[in-house]
Length: 355
Ligand code: PLP
Image (tube, rainbow, N blue to C red; front, side, top):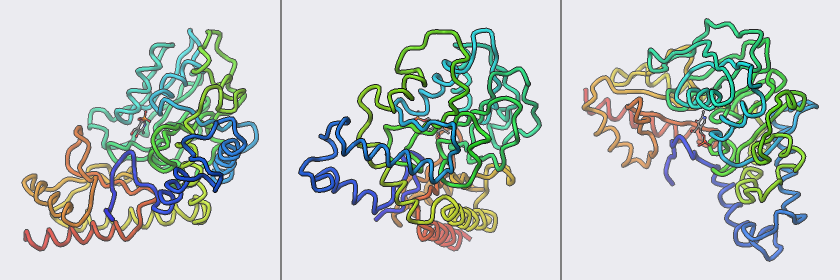
């Protein structure tokens, strides 16, 4: 088995992959594959309702919110959010913490005025801006809770005077947070929830209906809520594997239990980065992500041979994003701490050989 530190699609629990393979061959012993059952069948309806129930349970979603499983990835949400929430003559506030936040605000500009109220662009997004004021007349305030490419993460969510919208693609289900602080949360599944192809949206029902424009059905949250995420054929397999992954998380003790494991994994890896003189972290210490650990080597010539050593040890997916360089170890929920120790051992072995 490899040690999969890939950023996205990220690692899935091995047990889930085994269960999903069985479901492909014969779903729950019904003599049909999950790939060929009707999305209107009682079998799939129970998969979808179980997945929704698990989201509500694991995140303690309060009353008044709808849980949707949509398609189009988080990238489609970049457009759906302003399409549904930003009035033509209104404005929205965005916090610019990386490429994804940037792409989100770019889409919003098609629909209304966008005010970037804080940015760390000048430092290539190595920190989270904290010195910002959310305008009280904005339709909503958009944040990216974890910046997958740069390895920064918002450690707390300051209360916002206007509805808060969060892209939680790369840290949802990894730590506790209060859903009630947000009016809309979205996340592509392919990090902590399941395979690529489905996107989770948690939306407070009362924020809808405030824009006058006509919205095509597939882009309209109201249509999707009314259709129970089945306005059209849903991504049956991706929803199924998400349900299995959420069940796995529940059996592990839920978000609180996984957060403890995630804290331990991140602490061990950052400790080694700070201790080992060959390596250096790239993001501001107080904003360090517990999901994507980005680091470089003090001597860039060491990077290729270190990558080779990792490869020899079955460590995959740690090459940094092309816009940052160096390394990025994504330590999502399903990555066991033993894999983190294999990486730490490789760092120590490399340092020993290159004294
Ligand atoms: N937002 C964040 C924080 C991401 O990490 C990603 C992808 O990695 C995206 C958005 C884009 O997601 P998708 O590919 O599902 O559109």
